[in-house]
Length: 349
Ligand SMILES: [Zn+2]
Image (cartoon, rainbow, N blue to C red; front, side, top):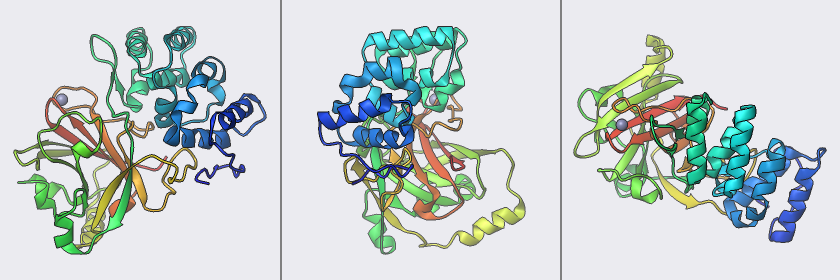
């Protein structure tokens, strides 16, 4: 059974509408295990979200407080909920603002929901809370979703040597000078992953074949912004830190930079019943190191484009163990209009 409830709850079968009805009955009970049920709902989001559709309105209007589901899974389960759900949440936000209602509204993501979010923010609702989950409110018009609704599990496989690496679609461990040029190739010290952006459904058009997730010699948090040249290589890179790394810290990172270490290839797999759903994520699935597409983590500020100030579009988030260097999550974002990229490092949630 690929549901492994974090609370130790015994997994329930979720094969058809009757099983989902039983799950929803349990969710209504105040003494039930909301987190354990949440892992079942995450499984449903990954496998048969259509079975949840009849319950969208009941959850939004009456059970949101017990709906222990990550924002990413909420997007799948609540996406496109009827407009009366939007009206219900907008009314609640006007009366008493809460991030739970705001996230549900963002997860619905319909035209009516995006209008309601823009109105909420312009009436004093918490803009940052929406930006945490990848939703941006421009100066005029409806809110914009700055992530793809299509998620892919990022699965890592080892690769034997640079020749094999050169032939794969989504390489891990390229030499830095293949993905950055000029002084940026000095500032950028590590290559985590390159993705063929057309293999992540729902990403905006991008002028280069691949986008790159790279790192610098510093512990988290940091954010790197860069432009791209005609070959998609990063240039004009600049990093912001909460605290610049000490010389000794940089030396520690330098000692890890062994050429040929941790070479790999990434396969992008649709969410399905073969993944392990536990604690609101799929990271316990053997080989899975992150997710491409879907919203950003939702706990940390996401980068805005240094050129146009728009919230950047989330591409992928992986654990550092994709290619050991530093600690925590590494994420990649793009601004498709300005052709800028951001890579950032954040801690564990
Ligand atoms: Zn921009």
